[in-house]
Image 1 (spheres, rainbow, N blue to C red):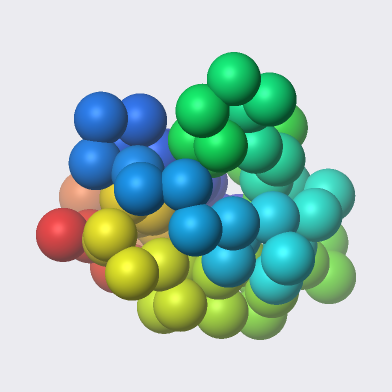
Image 2: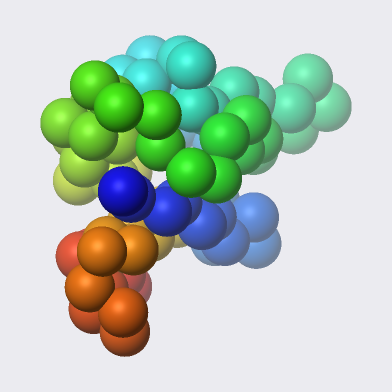
Amino acid sequence: MLRVTVDHERCCGSGMCALSAPEIFDQRDTDGRVVLLEQLVPPGSNELVRIASDNCPCRAISVTDTAMPGHRENSE
C-alpha cells in the first residue's frame, strides 16, 4: 500500500495532482495549494498517484510504499 504526504509550503498550486488523481488530491479555493483527500492510496490508484507525484513541478508530493518499512518511493 502507498502512503502519500504533501508539503503545503512547497506546493505552487499548478493543479497537476488534482488532474492526475482527483480521488486523492484537490486544491484549496483560496490559493490553489494541494489538499490531500486520502493519505493511504486505495487499491487501483497507485499508478495515478505516482503520475501525480512525478508531474508535480514543485516536488511537493512524496509517496512511500508502506509494504517496505523505511523505503521511500519518491521524495524530494
